Each structure stands twice: as C-alpha cells, then as structure tokens.
Amino acid sequence: MSLSAVSHAETAAPLAALLPARRGEAWKVGPAPYGVRPNAATSRLTNRHRSLIVAESAGRIEIFTDEHDMFPVTPDASVDAAGPDPVAALAARILRTVLPQLDTAAAHRARWDKGWHQALTNKAADLTELGFTLINHGAHPRVRSHVDGPALTWTSPNGAVWDVLSLGADGTFTVAYDGPVRGLYGLVPALLPPFDGPALPDATSAFTWHLTDRFPQIRGVNAAEVDFGAQGEPYGFIVLPSDDTPTDRADDSTHVAAQFGGVGADLLLAAASHLV
Image (tube, rainbow, N blue to C red; front, side, top):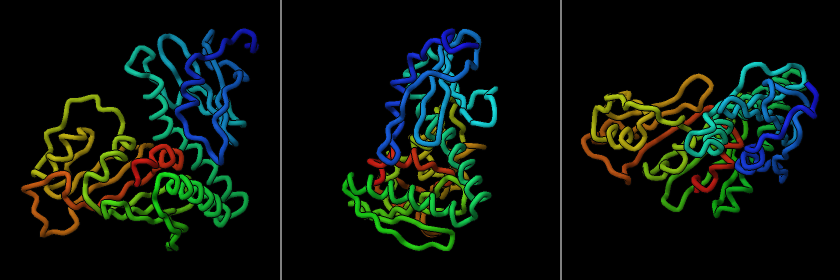
C-alpha cells in the first residue's frame, strides 16, 4: 500500500497531546510508513526511540507498536471510536500497558547488548526525569540506594512516604506507599483498567468495602487486604499495616501500606501530580 492511499488518523494529534513528553521531547505526529488495515486512516506517533501506529477503521481506533524488525499484525490496544472519550481511554491504555512493554523490550536489548549495568543506568535516567517532575509539583525527592537498583523517596504534606524502586532490569518500576488511604485516590485510577461490571461481592470487612466501593476493579483478599492486576497490566495490593489494626471501620484517613508493580515511567510522569 502506498503512502498516498493512506489518510491521516484524526485522533493521532489529540492522542499525542495526552502522552507525556520525555527528556523534553513531545510526541510527534507523522505519516505512517505503511498501512496496517485496508483503507484505514493511519498515522505514526514517535518519541525518541519509540514509535506507535494509530489506525482508524470500522468504528475502532487501534494502536500498533512500530518495531523496526517486524510488521505489526495484532493491535496492542483498541477502543470503540463511539465510546465515551475514546482518545482519553486509549491514552490511559497506552500508559498502562503499551509503553511499559516497549520499555521492557528496550531494557532487555540494553541488558543483552551492554549488560545489566546499562539497563540500570537507563532506569536511573528515568528516575532522574521523574524526580525533576516531582520537584516541579512541589515534592522534595531524594535518591536512595536499594539492593536491586536506584530508587527515589519523598514525603507528602499529609505525612505519607512514597518510594519508586527499580526492582530488576526490566523497563518498569515498583511504587511503595505508606500513609493515609486518601493519598492513593489519585494514582490508583491510573493503574486500573476500565470497570466493565458487575462488581464482585468479595468485600469481607469495612476496610475492604471502603476500597472496593470506590474502585470496583479491586478484589478483596481478606479482611485486611485488597489487590488488583492482570497479565500485562500494573498490579499491586493495599493492606492494613499491622495485624492488630481494626478492620470493622475505615475512612479516608485509615493508614495503609501499598505496593504497585509493573508501572511504566510514562504513567508515573503523567500521574506525578497525584504523587505529592
């Protein structure tokens, strides 16, 4: 298929605007080098070494990762073009799943080509970028050493302690939190897939009900813990910090500990205002 036969995807520019700039470079919209669907309006988004193909066809908007050594066949993300705010829904999916997959593939290549140290060096650069973004939002992060790589830590005005950890040499990060549960109300929605109902009746205490009522995608594990996650998605848990903490009452000030894994740098940058 020639380029002249492919029109530009109308959603490409507004989608690019919802993805965070990296190293000061915004996502750029350009013509697609090839078609992925017959007669589909198609564009390419690029940001440094990463590239995405946006295709609009048959009432759907699809995202394909544009890798140099393979032709994309199956979309990595897809939404109904007639759904509520499809561009925002697609951007959220890209931040949760597509970009972390690209970053993990890049981390594996770096580790293969230059060793474990290079993969951790790249993650340290991501943490530096996040650190400056947090400073712009009023936080005071500091670097601390961790057995598995570099980490950032800071304290919110509500007294909550946040950590972003490089656990391993893949392309994602682990977020740890210790503080009042209300401090998680901004970040958790960015980690969860859209709720498609019905809610699961697995709340076993006032504590788990307090969270599953607000976030129905979350599952109750026991009276003191909830978790979430699926293959290829961020995952994690929120738990009461000690066994003797009452589970029969809970409110927004309830003290919790939480940990979330599989979180990409782009999602953290996009959600930085919710981390302070």
